[in-house]
Length: 72
Image (cartoon, rainbow, N blue to C red):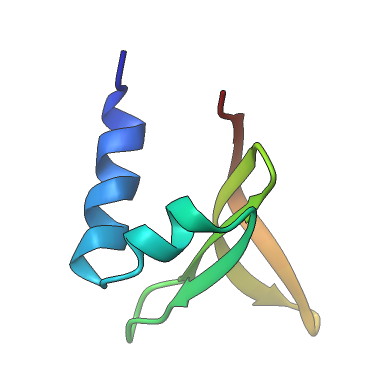
């Protein structure tokens, strides 16, 4: 069963032409920057997928929110 979260992430990756790379590699990282928005980072480490917006606070990058899911 595909979730709305999974569908949304796949749509974003497909629209930026990196979905095939995401699916083909066990280590993957992509960063999306848009003016006036926090950067969005999507990472894959084996079966662990992390999706987070990052902002800078006192010189450190802070994920907010950070969602981690495991895929089969």
